[in-house]
View: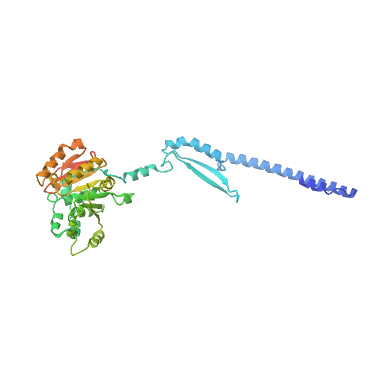
Length: 376
């Protein structure tokens, strides 16, 4: 039509001009007729290709956003049956400034794990990343196995990090000293540093630092290399007796770390710290309690244990030293046995593989500990 209008705008001359105009018009009409025939042939070709592609296993063209959304919704029940509720919709958007198109993928999920291709892998990871004070796995204390356990070479390597007169105790046999029992527990049951979440490894607690001997027995375990937090009262610097040859605490720490041990000292009153601090320090699977051994005269142990039970977060084990060392400790141990069912723990006397003055365990794990007394 644009061509016809331009010819019409050129009229107003004589008969020759009119004849020429008619000839040009005929030529143009013939051109349009040829173009129409060509377009009709192209349409037929497209139709044939479409029929051919629909009957062959060629992939279909990308669906529109509406079609993709409908397909995703129809697929959702099957996805739920496979443990996922993810639906994926694809839509095409065009940049108004450039005319470029891009695909946007929208992931619609009913829960945080819906887009995870392998939920079972996360479940396995969660098992190895136990938090709080729960045991990471059941504990079996076989007295014969503990008695046969021999960390002597490792203890010889680290004995220089405690007071000189305590070396003999560190090297003493199970049933005479409790350090082998501590090392056994740390070796077999401390959080694994090679797990899928090593940054979340839990510490082991030692209450009663003295010359750091118990902390060393725990921290020296291989291959677990436990993190140990050891606590003493605010005014005590008794641990300096372990820093031999005039070493500073910093020098001692550097040497300890060179032997792949991780020990942190705390001087504070665990009875007066805030509830938040108390939970931070004690919310772990293992606590060693060895302090004044006078639960009536100086009732720190009694009051600390009561605070821990009142907080109602602890699900681990407490190892208690010197339960038979004097009348006050014997009396308290008997009370603990009498009140075990009421207070939700199980008591075990581990003296045969612990300290000759008495080693006991309070198990708050709900039956995750098995003790096998198979020695005389």
